[in-house]
Length: 181
Length: 244
Image (tube, rainbow over all chains, first blue to last red; front, side):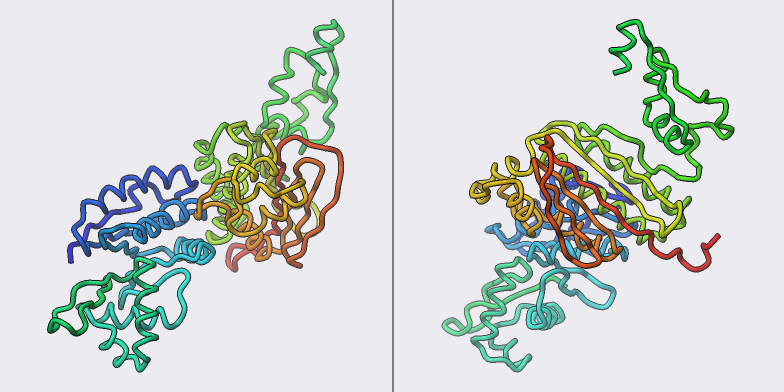
């Protein structure tokens, strides 16, 4: 999958206020829109020591919301968050009931408002690095198909996974799901 | 008043005996503004260290500052972080928490002011008892009630008391936007973490919130224009190895 990486540190080590975030978001959104279907915008936050909640809401919150309303499935991933910035981002997203994908050294995971079933499903899909159907995931995680369909529909609605046409015989499992790694 | 007395041919004498107060008003520009209008006593020569010194018994973090909009905030918040870490030995984490809280308060005030400038100041008090930091911002805008009523979802609000209660709920904002309206919620969480307090005054109501108890009280008083928010945070323990 195509990736584009943007460096948040370019805008400073301490990022305060919604107005500052608004200007950065416009730039990032332009990059996101240039990506093909299932492309990933990776926001590298290394060296950004702090941002306030208003900044996090405006930049990350709005980017996540834009994924949810977009007709073209794409992903936004954040990586190399400094400890304090990560703390504020997690709190900001939790209160907004939003979730973002965080790329950690070992794996991709969910940051923000996410329950254990969401995290488990996302982790399995991200680790697979290929599309999986709801049946495959239900078998792998030992859940019912109904429960898995609900989990996947929620993750897709939140912009954390995308539904794609499955490479299976016509008439069975027409869709599969894919997540950023 | 000094202008009026000067115009009447009777220049005033402003007596400021306290070093701390003199230092404060000097750095805020008041002494300079009165220079040709009034006699300020005692003479500045008695202040051996100079009244404009940033180091003192009562380090001031932010002079009384006029904010036209949020553009000036980042530089002020950087200054706050630097002084807290370098002068007052805050850890980076605690300094960022203070600056984050101040940022949210200031942006909240500017939003509710509706384009009217706000005035803010921050100071550390450490004379006796547990040291604490106080940040205050005030505006003379439309007030919390009218600000929230701009959003149709809050048009039911009837008075200042209801407006303050609503403003403290996550997501309550004058804008119909999911990413707004969380600043005061986060402020409450930071006040809780530092055993601090904050006070919101708007119209005829003042709300006082104690973070350590997660509990608030309201009282009525004289009507005030705009919104005033005061945040008080206890100083966190100095990190080991940085005690002087």
